[in-house]
Image (cartoon, rainbow, N blue to C red; front, side, top):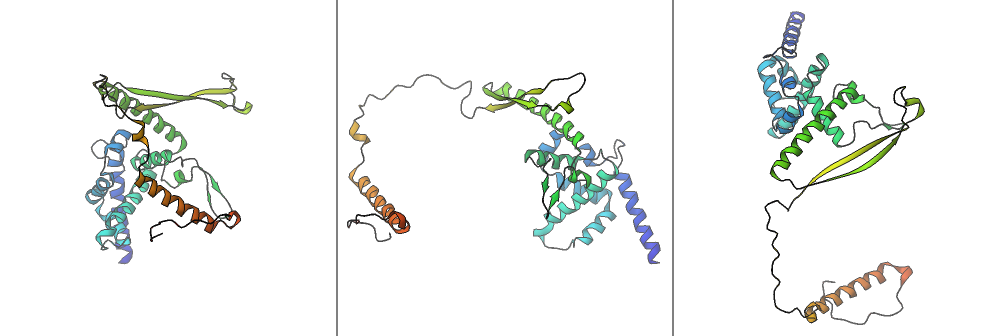
Amino acid sequence: MYGYSRCHVLKNIKQEITAVSTKVKGNESILFKEKSLSKLSDDNSFFADIYAEMSKRTPLFLDVITTCLDKDTSDNQKQRIIGAVVTVYSIILFTRNPEINAFQRMLTAVCIRGRAEDMNFGNKYYCLHKNRLNRIGITLCARSKLRLLEEASQLNKIEIVNYLKNNPLMKITGDNLDVFIRTGNQAIDIRNKDLHLFASNAISTRIARPDMDTTQQPIANEAISGADMFLKNTEFGRLESSYVILVWIFNKFSPCHQMKTKIKSMNVSGKY
């Protein structure tokens, strides 16, 4: 009886996952439909939408996962449980169909932003090789990462153009980078010994705008006296008290620089 029930449950779970891992229009998962960078950057309810899809299309699979995670926990732990469930669900669909990769594209973009996508940590206690995260289904492979960077570049160009339509004031900066190429990496048709790359940045203005008033404002006629720039007696007193405290600290905690002269008694606040 147990064996029959177990096979029946597994069969139903497989049917649910197979139905949601298709690319047929109208039946595809949100992980396939919402994988463009433009949608991922604008969507603030990405995890909640995936969890809602699981509740609707893979309810049995969701019950199994949440049972393992103790779904009757407190409200403070619900967000953590949703994150774990969505991660497992996304990795399974990505393993079945590599094109269902919205979750992996998002994490790959985060890794690129943090410059952690190609890190190679190696010592006798811990080792994380390149592409290890891709092998376990968390991030994209190197080739897909390059396509993701190209998509991000095109999206960035569109955003710059849209910004310039409203505010044409922008500063373009950059730096010329010469990358040396080893002899073994040179191709038959390209025998350059180095690559001339230009890393550019577009810096938008935070204050200036095209419609700002550029009329020079009149200067006040009142004469400014040099005496106005001097410290007042009360300001001299506060400054003197501060110097006394600094000298005492220096003399107290720097035995190799003991001062020869004694600090004369001054009116210093009791709290010091």
